[in-house]
Length: 442
Image (cartoon, rainbow, N blue to C red):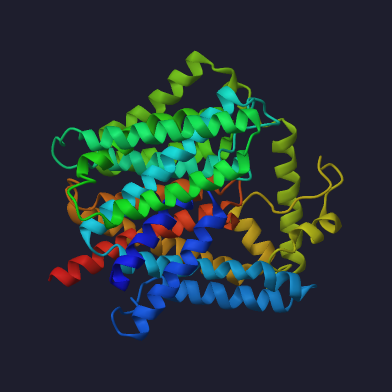
């Protein structure tokens, strides 16, 4: 097997597992980057120059400077090592430049999204994760991470359906058998977790099997998976992720999902934009408790955000150039905490822009905003190259997911969440992979 195919299989495995296991995703990413570097050294691949190179370099250098000038450089540099995740962007651009490979890797990402949502539903309905204090988190360590990724999977799947080609073929018998195997595996895993019998081992085996299945989907030389496979996965991800997202009771993810779906509607059929407020009105009329109980700004969580934002502004005023240092908000917060704040400590400030400015300084915030603007602008331009959606659905999906992540990031520091960052970088690569494919064909 060639190194190119090994890299493709590993990239597909990363796309699937970054939605369910950060450990597995980072191990697979390390292996994929090693293969990519080997291809670069042997000149079987070239490092693509992207419009994002400048902001990524500036953001990275300033982050390291901020760590060096922090009160505890050792801890700050330890936190700054997350910068290596940006290698996923370049890896994905190289791996996804061919349409067939790109579609199959995106199918693997949808498979991971389906597993994530199904895991949350099983926890809520069968395992007692049904209170505000104990929310479903699926395979992940925190419900905030799970809800943010379910938001991204929902938007990605909706874009896949909205921009699908033609009428689409029916799913094959292979599709249904694979789906049956997935349902069976999830059922076995739910039983193990309910009985607390080999629950951890079972989950690890399940994630390993998911990674293997994703790689097999990308590397298959047979006719399967087909375009109908991706459509089936997307059609399942939408209701599963939507319901799991509602049950998560996570308001920032709700907001992000609405913004992402609105972007999909605006790009595909602007008249369909009316469906977004219509869905909101329908929910308000039905008044499900899981939603209405969270529609408030007077709860302790909302008040705590207000006061931590005030503390964040004070941090910026105190150290505007290099900030407190990466990973230093937890230790610095007690000195800036307002007396009215409900919680004595917080690891972050629940806002992307405020967190980056307080942690790394105002210049680093500028570099980050440059990166966001460049990524969203390139995604928009690439999506408009085919206004009818026959080719550039991936670019439209990238724009919608980025918009969703940024909207949710107004009330949550999701850019600092490794799983969400990896998913965002993976999706951000799609417009550049499309551009590289077009250049190669020309």
